[in-house]
Image 1 (cartoon, rainbow, N blue to C red):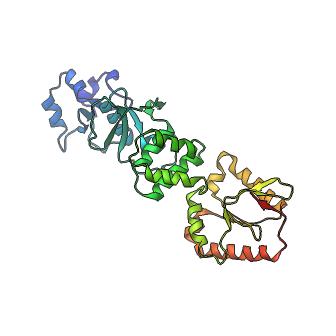
Image 2: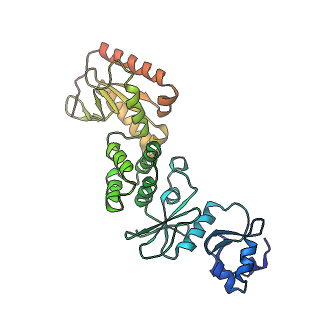
Image 3: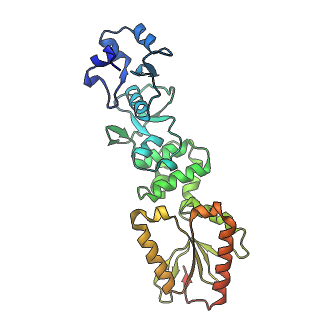
Length: 316
């Protein structure tokens, strides 16, 4: 860059992300407001990101630079929440809604308005921040519910909530409690989905329920506990045909490799085999990619299970 004003900025005047600075800081170094304005015109060397916040370059701002600008604008008590906070907490990018906007929480008595790419939310329930790489974040539970409240598509909300739950960081009950504690605006959809999550353990299972409508004999139960003849727990299949003791498991390989899930899957299948239970395992991707093939496999498994003596197992 080599700009004399950039090089004159003291380290304390700039946030962690280089080249994002208050216009007031530039004025304190002797640059008048008109000169700052001219440099931020189209084609100029700088650009205005938010009211009173300048990026000392003219390229497309990065996510980090937008977050830095948002925190400068929001003030020392501001906290990043929503999608950007979820991403920095470790949720997968593929399950997080758009990062085009930065969602900021500020104390209710502070006077800041949303602007440009920034959504400002004043709250009386400002959480204690979790600092990651110098950025104050809302705790994951709050960040997830804040993101979910602003989504209007059920599939996107479901993916986000299940990602937070499956990563072992939140429970449906905790997420529901967070929704109950805050504003009710935008909570109807995530609340409904969370109430279903206990029995719909993944979005893939929701797809399997729809697909099961094409079976000659649909499952008799969903997510029911199965026990052997001595009363020992065997498993809790996604779908269960009690008349023939057939289990259907929607197995997400990616999820099962997380938190030793793959080992648990092997243990579960060993228990099924020991109890004489027939099992159909389906990857989530096949539910949409090859629904007819999945239906054929489940139908064939049902016929095979019906042809052998039913093992002595029961549900509860």
